Picture (cartoon, rainbow, N blue to C red):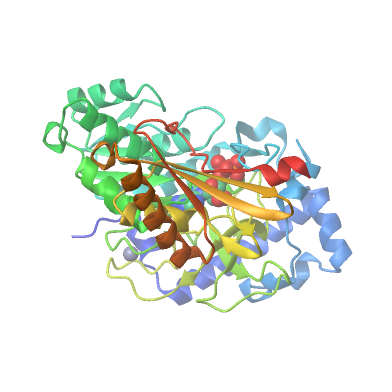
Length: 435
Ligand code: ADP
Ligand code: ZN
């Protein structure tokens, strides 16, 4: 039986949800216009007033907000509430440049934790569970978000933060943790360490994991599910929209339901800004309709994704987003071809390699080069150079079939690629250093 945290909302009819969104959007636009000069100027520039926004059908009239705007307005320029009403700050991980900060009122925190509680409930979490949170705590939203959700559900919460992997496993065993929350790359590392310690999935009680904050593939999902003996679920969010819990996966494991009572999603053409129909791949844009302190309207996430209203077997009616295939800024353009790290990851795991790899892109004599270092599993080691060269060639061919260009593959010894305890760094693009 499917469990819901808030069945009324999660299974609401489309008409009722639209009505709720319409009301909330109209009020939110007024709130932002009156309190955020930066956005008011953008609206004035576009000749739009709050009176023009009567329902979600008018959403497209509003101007977009980008990460550059957030940096421009740093630190307080987009704040919509007096500081005296704000109780918390979080900040992006700075994966793609200067950090941006986001502010929360007490109510914002409460709604955010509520979204995370939905995610935990959707993977079967109840007050009888022991939930180990090994996302980083602090400015990063991963730890505090899932921690708050876990408290709401009433799980026994283990606020581990990331790192110290053997200790993570010891606590997992001693406390009988049943749910784990961390990045997928860290989950893979924990699984690897468990087996390195001579333990098996019989030695732990985990049943589910909630993994997000970075792109991961279906192949990676299966590999984590096997090594930890669990079901692995995706969760998505970004600091700008509060953190994890903007969307979450249900028992069907085919994409994440967006908490539409708080966030209205759109998919746009990243080049023209045109809104694309359901089912198209494009840039995900969110309008937060309940946030008080930092209510971003039409925020461009740069995440590339697809939305679907296909009926879900879990009974939720919330729209679903597919696994983001990466950010537009993660996409490498190599010899004119678009390549995502996730495509390489998919090939590696499919061919029986570990998800430990590093992609290095460079430009030599005006020609782009791509080198992929791939870690072998101990049983793939061979002392015959010829065997190794053959393995490298086969892997390069499989990658060429996937991405369309020929990478240089280097098999490296087990454990030689640095493991990630948070967001994994998969690409070094030296071309940017030359520019
Ligand atoms: P930063 O932008 O510095 O990494 P955040 O910690 O706020 O800061 O990260 C948010 C970003 O992380 C999202 O925009 C998205 O690119 C990525 N992300 C979050 N969850 C997922 C997920 N489940 N799948 C793929 N990417 C994700
Ligand atoms: Zn579902």
